[in-house]
Length: 155
Image 1 (cartoon, rainbow, N blue to C red):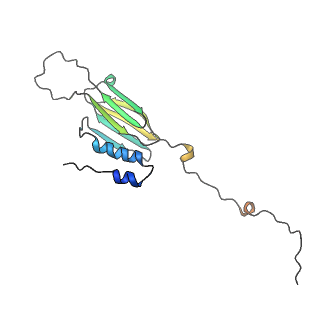
Image 2: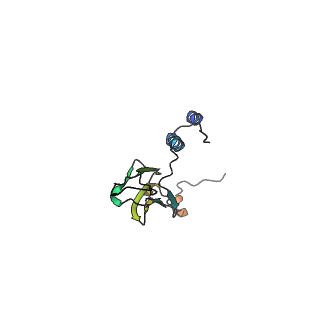
Image 3: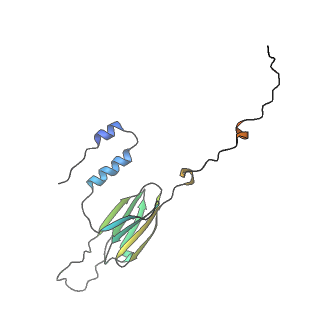
């Protein structure tokens, strides 16, 4: 049994979170098709990896694309069987997997080996967004030299 969440109260009381609510609603409406199986890993603070089991697919039968922070992986096998199947246990149906990428996450590369498709991702923050250290100056800079022009006379 799936619980459907209503995000409309959040839409009424918040501004600027439309993208987050859109992601939540899309995740809720997503089909429960778990094929092909995949793993997502965080390798370090800014490096990630997606590993997908695509046994039987060749390199030219898989398409990986990124558009507007959406990583799409599509696969479609070409039928090359010459005989008649008595039992078909190896899945060869076409698939599409989509992953929403956070801002500044880039796809570095992809490899296909031993039936596993591995996609490496890296978050690269622009220099303007990285924290920077501010040096503290000496007191001479903070207090300029002051000359006294008139002398106060004690009464």
